[in-house]
Image (tube, rainbow, N blue to C red):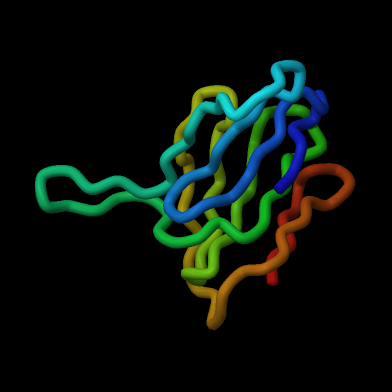
Length: 108
């Protein structure tokens, strides 16, 4: 889980999605950001359980989300869409962290 830069929303990783809770509203209501989609026999996006997340400190709304399926998705959280799916890890990604200036993303 992680908060956005404004601390107004809580982002929670699930299987093939991220659920977004507005902390100013009590209850279970949430919006869902689908990380993986199937349409017309084709699959797109970031597959698997989202295990870790971090927002870029530059307040651009760029969200990095790691998954146990060995990839990292970079999302435009404001628009709710996947920008890049970074692949190549040898194991599940359990940590993502942006550098202090927001120019570098560290994953492991």
